[in-house]
Image (cartoon, rainbow, N blue to C red):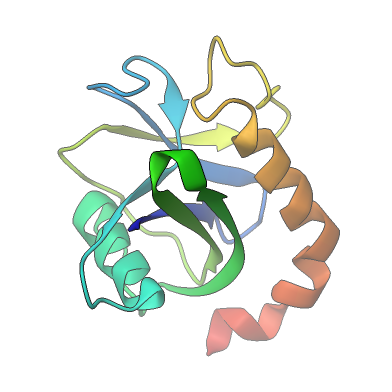
Amino acid sequence: MQGYNVLMVYNKDMDKLLMCERLKNPYKGLSNLVGGKIEDGEKGIDAAYRELHEETNISSEDINLHHLMDFKYFLQDCYVEVYVGRLKRDVLVSGNENILYWSNLDNNFFDMSLYAGEGNIGHMIEQVNYVKDKLFSDKDLFV
């Protein structure tokens, strides 16, 4: 079963989420979270940090990622690991795969005409809202 990851990167103030505009299919032209493929034998968390750095230039020194949830798609023979993190400081993001931008959090992330993932982005954001006090504290900024 092929593994993928999705990375939810919040800015330091937790009021913006890093998104990308997809330049190719699937979901070409829609907004999505960054992420990618988990290679054979690679641990999920290692793949998450690798993909984050490859796609955004954000390093493990800039953020602590937390494993939030998984999605398993039996009929498509794949699974998706979802990681979330809060930047410790302002970081200049850059990448070549998609157009990166910081999104406000008051958007309708369930709108499938604008966002990839059949509403999953909205669901993931709601889940982060339920647990963000457990996941993030000001001490995370200094670790």
